Length: 493
Image (cartoon, rainbow, N blue to C red; front, side, top):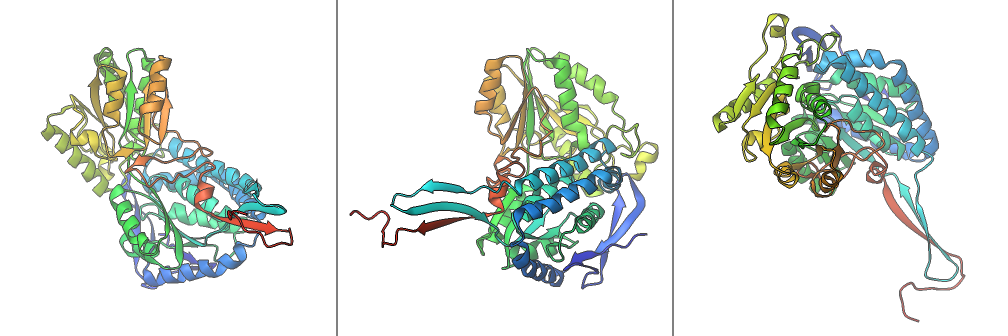
């Protein structure tokens, strides 16, 4: 059995409590992957002070040199891609094809962030006065608290950490308790690439204990959180007391629209990937399928045929299409929503039960599930389930379909399959979501594009792309008056 530690101020160390928690394989609950420190507020204090101390030297490191370290991280991630993918699959269950993609997102983000080290642009603008020069530059903020989820245990930490580091900030990193080894290996790679002591600090443990301590700490100036909307609201309220900068990437209830003129085979591949990839455990997962009435029955028949062929199992096996839920509690949540759907009067077309055949009984497997005869106001059509459950809704035209799609508190990702350019542009204009796909599934974000949502999916900030560097930096405006005279801006003369 492996025993893992925190990483604080350049040293690997146990929790001050000396307590630990177990990490088990969700495809085989009998396989213990390791034990990890159950950290306390005292550990948070040490990590924050380490990051605060290191900030003074890290912020003065030229941004291109900070980028050079991230480029090395990308190189090491490339070399260790298969190893990291297997660790992730064992920790959270999704198939190797997807965990390889998780690592690739980290690689892409590393190389993209590295180039931004030479592109942290400011602005120069003319002054309204004679012999005066005006400019604005971006400066680092301080200590960033990064709280990340289990479903993308490498990609999402890189989305947050790389731009934070590139901008000159230091980091206290709290990963999810379900995927602590991936986080540990990631930090090891940062160390190997040359990250200075104290710039990145890793602490394991429960969000209710150390997550709250990070959010409430006076010396943590930035919080980036990915997780549930419920927890995000609590973080927002707590962080308000110290006026921290907060980025929240929260829930989703994403829908794929299929119009009557769509390429049905293409749309079928999209919904299978969107609904059942990662066992439906993505914030961008396709949770609703909105079908035009003219193709509704035909498409359902095609979908049912393909879903029956999906193979559940250990994600390390090449024969597996769908892995387990991440935990027993998550599987129970999924099943509770299935029971809600049945009580609401939706028709359970397939699935709706634990998968316990043979070796599947050793893990937290749930059969891919489809509900039909779903109405837009049912709970299974409005609330995030985070599992392999798809709700099918019938529509008669594109405008009604968009109205149904928008009928949730969330607005992360969306998709429409159509050959009609007018319908496509109407969707781009009228869908209330941060991401819109045309003839592609609701999942598949690229590292160099902004990622995030509207409404209760977040608080307006974006991860990925060029916009994230604004979140992790402050604008400083500078005036240089070389006239030799006393000049007053905006005063009539």
